[in-house]
Amino acid sequence: MDSTNLEPSLYTVKAVFILDNDGNRLLSKYYDPEFYPSMKEQKNFESNVFSKTHKADNEIAFLEGMTIVYKSSIDLFFYVVGSAQENELMLMSVLNCLFDSLTHILRKNVERRCLLDNMEGVFLVVDEIIDGGVILESDPQQVLQKVNYRADENPLTEQSVTQVLQSAKEQIKWSILK
Image (cartoon, rainbow, N blue to C red; front, side):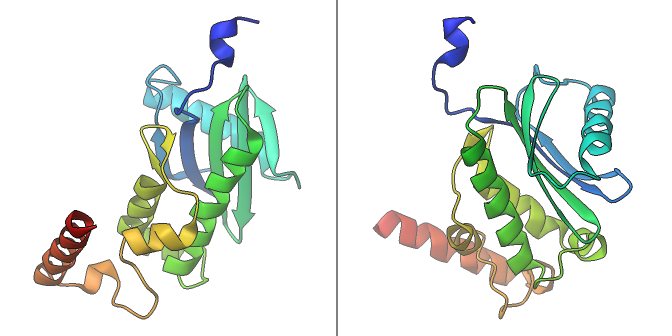
């Protein structure tokens, strides 16, 4: 093996995607431009992953030289993809953080319709957990605090622009004062 491949890197996540129970893409983010650069290649990879995992009871798969951890809920499949040398526990912590955060945002109703109704919150959660392939956070409570999304508050779609701007000002003010 080439020793350059074994050096530690912060860029641990190659892709995150959520598919419905038919294997259709609901959300996907690819962080490595060399890892399936075209939409067609991405969809082929996703359908290949789905066909290998949708009936399996496992939580991890090794496919096409990638480590894939996954979880299903009702009619959704959540996937986190890393390189073959990646630590499965780190990838699983990302997956669990994503799933737990979305469970909270969707009020324990993790299904296709609710996910599609709350896509802005889903994208915020993914962006708080992973940035450019680097894992930023693996604690769902911290993620929910950062996206300022609580079950007892109005969802982001029901907040006015003024409320969102005020919330952003508060967060900036507190981050500067720390």
